[in-house]
Amino acid sequence: MRLRFFQYNAPMRRYLITLVLLVGIVFVVSSMADLQNIVETLKRGDVRFLLLAVALQLLWVVNVAALLRAVYRTLGIEETLVNLLPVSTAAIFANVVVPTAGMSGAALFIAEARRRNYPPGRAAAAGALCVLFDYAAFICVLVLGLTVLIRRDNLTILEVMASLIFVLIAGVLAIMLFVGVRSPLRLGNLLAALARFVNRWLYPFLRRDFLLEERAHQFAAEIAEGLHEFRSGPANLVWPFMLALSKMALMILVLWATFMAFAVPHSVGTIVGGFSLFYLFFIVSPTPSGVGFLEGGMPFALQSLRVSLANATVITLAYRGVTFWLPLLLGMVAFRWVGAGKSSEGGPSLPSG
Image (cartoon, helix red, strand yellow):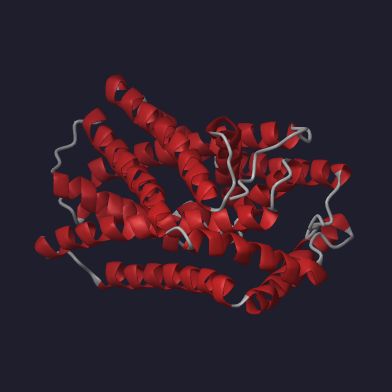
């Protein structure tokens, strides 16, 4: 029996794709002033190191797809990196322009799973596990970053509170996945409540329910099945965790290349501590992906790491241009590409043993 948690057909697919792309275009147009500031800032940098930063960021985009593929394999789904790259890149765009705590990207994974004929519940579990691996890897970096702040006597209550909020977010996600393994019934109740919330949000646009609430428990059972397979192979955790760590390392290197591009004096502690603050406030920001919040607050955070305010402002704008706007614009193209795709004949294989 094929699970249908979504009321999903070709006209609705096209409508949702058009709607999300329209929201994305509005988002970009409304941010043109910020983009112009970033472009003017980048023009002042050393092009060699800026190109290195862009190359590292593109490698990070591939790393995101590689992490998703590694998690898929632990859940019993064999996919290729070529197939997952546009989907994972499109999810970056969707999570920014339709901020729903990562649910937009997860919905994209689910829709692609249905299109390619493998269990949507496992795709949803894979999206959540990728986020959890990211959080676990960042905890390792955050410990180093907070150590730098403590040694420089610059740790404030703001960083402490942000760190506690981050740990709380990671803990809630871990508990939800644990509930999915131990009690599919409770997870089904949670998904049913989520379905009601999403349907209320989308009803003014679709004039019908997008999620089938009565199928939530079947969908939860499928997620639990995938998570059980994930739990049964703990040795498979190593490679996804290493890929999550490499994502953090690449973003740290992008920050280093940005400092080099503008000849800003720095140390290893400054780079690690600066990245920790960037990513921490990116996660706990009250605005989607820290838009506006990071641009305004990070120069002062970098100043606490002994970077002058003028240099900190330049670094913030350039770093956001490479790590936020470049993946976002690539994601917009990928979202259109994925949305235009037709149902595949075969799809990936599901190992039987």
